Length: 103
Length: 140
Image 1 (cartoon, rainbow over the protein chains, first blue to last red):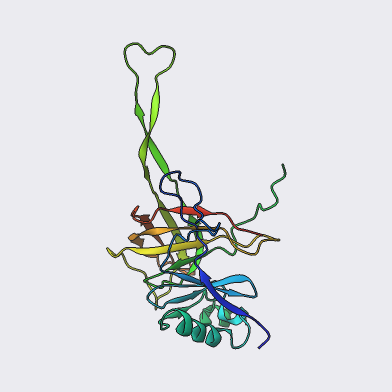
Image 2 (tube, rainbow over the protein chains, first blue to last red; image 1 turned 90 degrees about the vertical axis):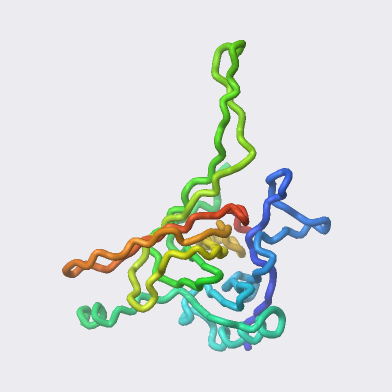
């Protein structure tokens, strides 16, 4: 496998309830807006969000992901967070009627 | 100071955590977050009327336009869910900016079916204020 997947907090940062400023904990780590969600990073870049329901939403079309990435992500989520449910990704435009017209 | 991370909207992604709605989005208008102002003018006020900001903000709503998918049509819902909109990754960034919060799909507009016309729809996601609609900067 030529890529590295890691599971971490959702990247959106909560605002401090008193000051309204971006919220960091005592260790200087940002407090996630959605503590019940996770994100999946591919080589350090966020490529998917995972809900508490196990829905994995990729931020790039499946065709753009490295081979084996989706299955590896599902395995990682099952091992470290929750049983995967739906797996979705943005789709490329694939209307067959329009494709036929173009030929 | 020059702004290094100005970008276009192409590449933005919306993720609905519960409904797992996945469509070909063509536009996302992230709307306006605001607070009301309260008139504090009194009889001894001089010069200008005076105002103070309220404690509560109006979280706003997001308006989406999309290519209609006849196997994945959205619907209104009274179930609160988390929405995360990821901005395009600007050159030099490793984490995208996000705009996120909880809310409901409060309206869906169905497509116009026209001759040689792409079917498009629109929907409105209204933040419910339970998890604040929050913008987070991207990072390098």
